[in-house]
Length: 329
Image 1 (cartoon, one colour):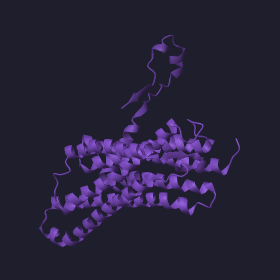
Image 2 (cartoon, one colour):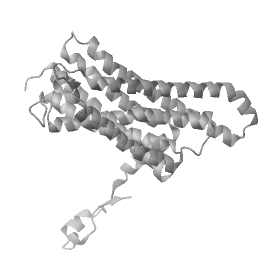
Image 3 (tube, one colour):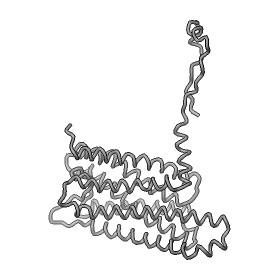
Image 4 (cartoon, one colour):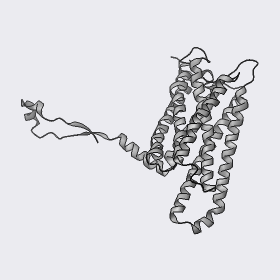
């Protein structure tokens, strides 16, 4: 096989997406335990679904997009747009819509709790019901974008080392008329919520510190930390969708290899969730350490042989002696 720039870029992208997938899987297990087993805070339910979306996106990037770039083929089809390539493109769009709306849910959750001091709106039950509704809603958005609009379907495109809309000559891209306003409105609404949160915290901190008890202070500080973490996720999200729109325009007259920047930045966006939770969230970090210790529970339980080992070996009874055993603690 001839080593080309495209092959090297695809290989490097595969390593990046696989690393992101591994980090997100570790984060998913730890956040799942905090959300559904320990029920530490209902905010972890939102985080769980957000990271689950990233796991699925990175699974497709690792096992489909990267190999298709390396092999310069669509793997499951001989043409760019087919039933199976549409399945991957539709899955991406479903998860993208899901992540877009989840950004708003995260911001509203922090605004309601910190600014409005209403802790009974985002309960465990209502949050689960919200995502139960959100999943079919995003499916409807995806189906309309991919199958009902005259143009243009979203596909994984190894020819551009990226993603693309499949164009139809003479027909405008109807997806742009919906996707762009949706991405922009999601970002604006979320940004307004976080600005109001930080403004409220800034104005109320002196008064709150003088009248609140230690438990209330600790809880408020924890809620603020969650808001900061979510706002960082929003920054990465905005950065990615803007680049997704701007890069194809900027790179139109350049070599096609430059388009690898689009999935690369999106992979970084998906990785940011795991890094922020695993690196900066103390509760997730604690559960992560416990999870990694459990992975290494199997070890050999060794028994030292006696000095007169030759007698054991030459004796007719040697097969009856106990051998070192493998024990999983």
